[in-house]
Image 1: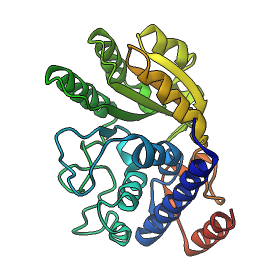
Image 2 (image 1 turned 135 degrees about the horizontal axis):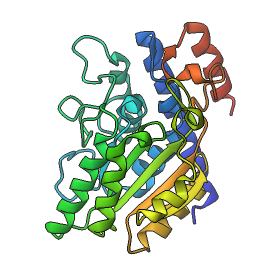
Image 3 (image 1 turned 135 degrees about the vertical axis):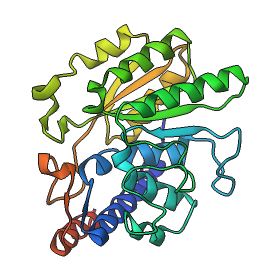
Image 4 (image 1 turned 90 degrees about the vertical axis):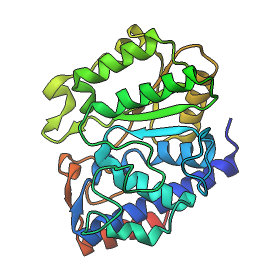
Length: 274
């Protein structure tokens, strides 16, 4: 169980991460706001509390791995890596600009600390499953974490990867589903509904928990339960798209949108008073 002081520290870090994401998107003018801000708590908990990593040795062979399968949430991962010590936060302000090391979608050949290139939805989870299988074959103790989107989970490859992970008993794999309910063209439930998604992932052999995706204690408890199980894990994160961006929170248009100076000013004022 997380102590109150620890939760406050994580909340403060999540606020800093959101602020940096907003500044990054403002610097380039627009970007993937909604799906970046909805996953900040999960990333903060992993990188600042759960994962066994060495920022000074980013390719350490025994590190835990993370795959951002919904690669358009790269800005949130970049900001998290920056504050974890992989590179200075100000470098992230070159997001998606010529010569940058921070492209719109995650690229392991560009950005220090990124474990897998992603962007073609559905493919990142397969890579994470491969990493987890490699860990088993090599008798390594590292864990692999992957984050998929709810719109992404409409891809058949996601379910093929889940089926294979269960078949191979990859209990060193934990998958997060960002269940914010909105994708680029509309509500997920109207385009290709996932429900009952918890029952489906259970049927595919995953130890499944559904939590408030902005509640650190709930996410942490779910990870503990998964670690104690003998199956791969699925944490369904019920989240709010663009969480923390007062001008766009919960809006379909937040998937990819401009972040003006006025937008930034309003969001910073709201975040910095919390």
